[in-house]
Image 1: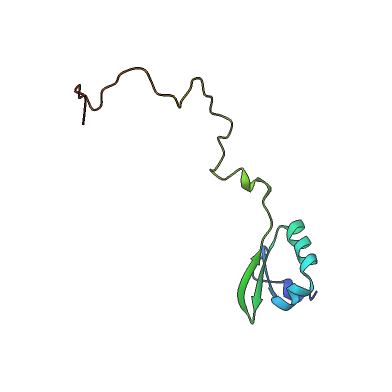
Image 2: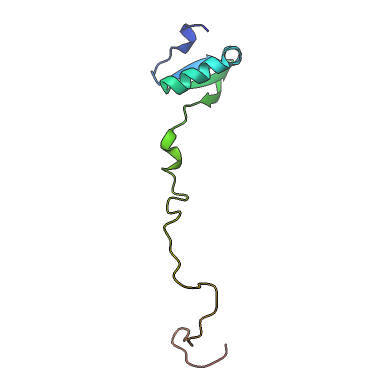
Length: 95
């Protein structure tokens, strides 16, 4: 792989033409994983894709599922309640 294609204005992002990426894909994946850098893949100088490192704790930072296993059911929450109740303070039956 050409050393010049790996240089870019920032240390964490590197541009690479699609043809060169295709020829060195596995090597680039290893570099991304080891050095924690991004590669922007270009076609005719236009960015078309980005390969980025996986962040190990990324799944823990999502709001989905973070409370899994913390809810405790002490009673049956599905069966109807046998206690009469009033709706909006109305005491009459019907609609």
